[in-house]
Each structure stands twice: as C-alpha cells, then as structure tokens.
Length: 381
Image (cartoon, rainbow, N blue to C red; front, side, top):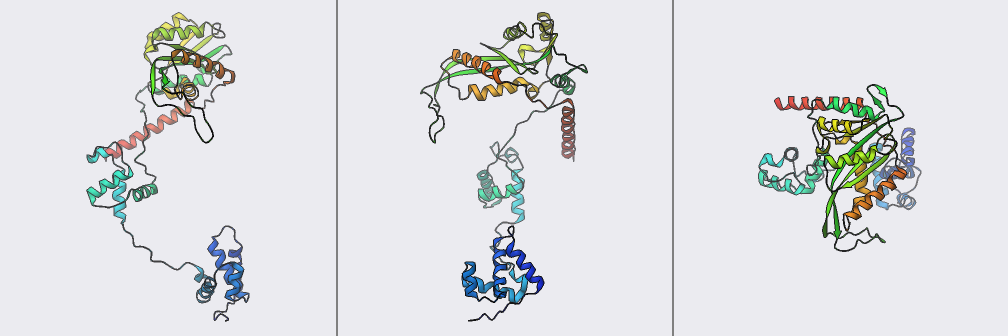
C-alpha cells in the first residue's frame, strides 16, 4: 500500500538532510533518519526503504510519519520522562561535604574515607541509603578521591632560598656570579642506608610465557649495610663504596676515595654538595673537608631539600635497577652487585638534564607563600 504520508522537500530541507546523511562526524541515528526521509522523498515505499537501508519497515514508517508531521524538528528525539530521580541535590551535597572532611573530624576511627565507608556513615548519620558506586560517581564529577592521599613537606627554613640558590647556581655552572672553569667540579654526595640482604627461602623464578618473575615472600635476614655515593654533576660519573654504617669516618673515606683520584686530585676547585645528615653536618664538617682537602669546598643544602640533591636521583636508579626485588644471599653479594652496577652505569652515564633554576625556585617559594596567606585568611574568616 502506498503510504498516506507523501514527502515533498523544499530546497532548504533537501540541503539539510543531504548534509546529515553524508556526515561522518554526526551520530548514526541522525544519518539514518535523514536517509529514510530522502528515500521517501525519492518515491520509495516503506518496504523498499527498509530493504535499502537495512532497517525494519516499522522504522521507515515511523520516521516518514514523524517528518511529515513535524518536518525537520520531527526527526529529533521526543522528550522522555525517564525514571524519577531517587536522590536530591541536597543528598549529593551531603556526600560531597562529608568526603571533603577528615574522618577524625566526625569522630570516625578511620584515616581516610572509602566509598563503602562513606555509604555506611551516611546511612547511620542521615538515613541516606546510597550505594558505594553511586557515591564514587558523584565524587568523580568534582574529581574528588578521598581514598587517595599525597604527602608533602613544608619549607620551614627562613633562609631556604639563600641556601638553595648557590646549589642551583652550581648546577647551572656558576659560582659567585662567574662561570665555573674547566678544572672545576661539582659533586653531590649522600648515603643510602639500611640496604638489607634478604635471602629468599625458595629460588626466584625467571619470567616465562604469560608469567612475571616470581619472588618468594619469606626470607632470611643477612644483615644490612650503607651505600655511600658521590655523583659528578658536570661529567655524569659515579663513585661509591659500601660501609657497615654511616658516620663521619665512612664519609671521610668516601671523600678520600674521590679526592685521591684524577681529575679531582689536581682540580682547582671541587664543590661537595651534601644534605644536613649527621655524617656531614654544620660548620665542623666544612672545616674538616677544607683541612683534609684544600681544593674541596663543602656546601650544605637547606633542610627538607633532598629533591634538590642529584645524588638522590642516582639512588632511585640503583633501587629500581639493582636492588629490587631484594634477593641477596649475603652482604658480599650486595657489595659485588653495587660495584658491578657502578661500572655498568658509568659506561653509559650522562649528566642529568637539570632544568630547575634559581628563578624557578623563587617562583615556587612565591606561590607557596601566596597559598599559605590565602589559607590563613580563609581560616580567619
């Protein structure tokens, strides 16, 4: 039977529907509906349209009728009532407010919230039966994840900038406003403490097909040692040694190991950058270094500035590549591993691409100060 809804298109409607039918970025349903109307306007009946476009006859009949009654506006989705909302905006605000507060503030013996914990607390406090998945979906809208945490260290040294700036200048090849000479060297020295020898109760299994390396959980302790390392910032070289413990004497032996070898023994100046650990703390350590090695100068980083110590970057490489997973039969095996790793690393080592400058430090401290002032004003209000 011929359709009672005969389609005749105006020029504007023809252009709009043709554009929709050929669009590769538009939705499939819009392309399909436009194609049905264009086929109807070409004189095809509903059965022919269904065969040509691979849809059922009822679909062709529906959009022919909808277009005949409402023209282009009739091809849009009709309004749907949908399921009535179960929770109100106030309920969602209650969840967000609870998630943004520490559990201890509510007397809850938890360190941080999780989805199920928030659901139980809301059920007990507000008689609000919300599932954990719904809570996570609400919090995701505001990028809230109270089950995660990040640690941070505040800058408490009032002289932080003044003490850190010379170190950053040395990284940039400058000292007292002048470029370093070709016979000047910069060394970052630090200690990696308590490297344990953990002998696994069963041998480690190598990786296999569809299987990662397997390491036995149980182990026997074989003692611990300290690893002292000196990283040449400008040359990209490492010199290290293992000691039973840290202290003034072990650090002095590391300095002797470095300063008695070339090119440091005949260098004009060797700048040693260290933290404020007990092995090299205060003015006494500067005096000891100067007395033992006249061409050496010890420079201390400010407190809480390990992120400015390039030796820590090397230690992270050692931990990831040589010490993890920890499976050593004894301390001698650790010493051999670290010595072999030094040789391997020096064969391919390059200076770290350090980009943090004195200007970056000034900008960072300014932003921290502005943040602290804003927080103080907010708490006062």
